[in-house]
Length: 202
Length: 387
Image (cartoon, rainbow over all chains, first blue to last red; front, side, top):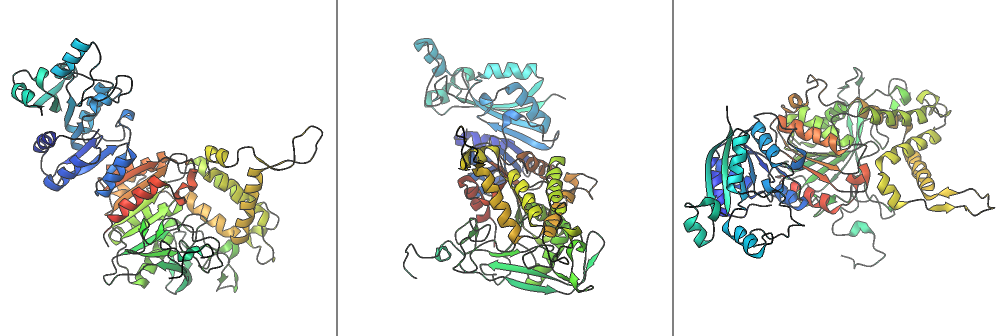
């Protein structure tokens, strides 16, 4: 899944230090890596499995490696990256909790973004229609979707606590006017996407 | 331009390099080999495509595989039915674009297509080298190629590119002469062969050496040739270059002659038998048995990290170029795992690398064949290679 929202990009960019070494898991068409390279002198690699995305990244002169994230990151050494980033892909992983731990083994820090299943529209869809939400943000039917592990912000934070993961920063993003207005008041209800900056507790 | 009609030879196609002529370069500075012996003088036969720019900065070296040679693109004459072995990827507008690059393709030392090899005359004895031709390693080829670069006035290659055994040479280039290449393209290759892979090579060599006409490699002295042995060697190799699926799709259990009908004792020949026999036959007519042994040994001996404490990360730490690594899903001779080992070592050494594992049913041979995804990603990568 590619990074579509400009806001996500700006937030992530702000959290990554100049000249650092970054691993981008599920780098899509390379938008983030390209921005980080051009604006923050970042080096590193993107991992991707979509053939067209890989070709696009190669065309942009990025380092992209054909690798399935569900196979793990065993080929990367401990603490070998300053930051490991995963945008809008955690919910597609077979074992998100293991992926998080792997990210924090390989990277000194990690940045994760995912869609909020606790958003009021999703809740309303399920409550009112009694069916799994399908919207412009989550456009798939339940039986045919890459998103196999949805969670809410609260769910994610409970997982972080149980895995001893330290949440350094959290930014809640919303594009719709009403959500924008209310997201700081009730993030788990009005936030559309969350961006988490994580570190393993020492 | 002549008009496009069905009788027009493909060398006139707008994406073909056209008619090409090989050239022989003679070297008389002795070349010290990895085995300790020295070649006092030698020839290299070379083809080039495209134009070297004024800065001499747009040159690309093509390293050939086991049975390859200098004729990588275009045609030698309008009578040729087949173009050079990598014509699908070298030409105007193709991934290795002759409109942008000056491409150098040679027959390696020890070869049998015009460069000094076992068939050549040993100046010390006045007789063909035969089995006494020195054992070569990939690094010997790399050093001879560096001298060729010197001769052509090429200080630094824009890229060194190779598939299979050629990929091994390209990687060796990046360690032996790190400042002399900007890009290294390694396709369907490995940092070292597996035991199974060496076993296939040894079986092929045994087919040659057990041919009564082999005469310990000195068949030229006996005015004979181990055609049968070389043919079987090629058949063994060929099986391993294809995939089970690919062979199944192409030949299945189709019968070329004979019948399984009840009461018929006419011998049955499967299409695959006839195909392999034909491949062995054609190959053994145009290749040299000692060269085959020499090339397979060079493959077996290659171990990228041997002199770097068997640590590939340490080996690649010397490199200064960018890498593109490509593998093919059904290639079991140089499996994708081998390419991933290369990529992991490059990442470990913090070197720039991109890697793609291309879906294909063609086994190891895929690297020679036009495959859409492979073609596009190769093109995209090469567009980023500065001239």
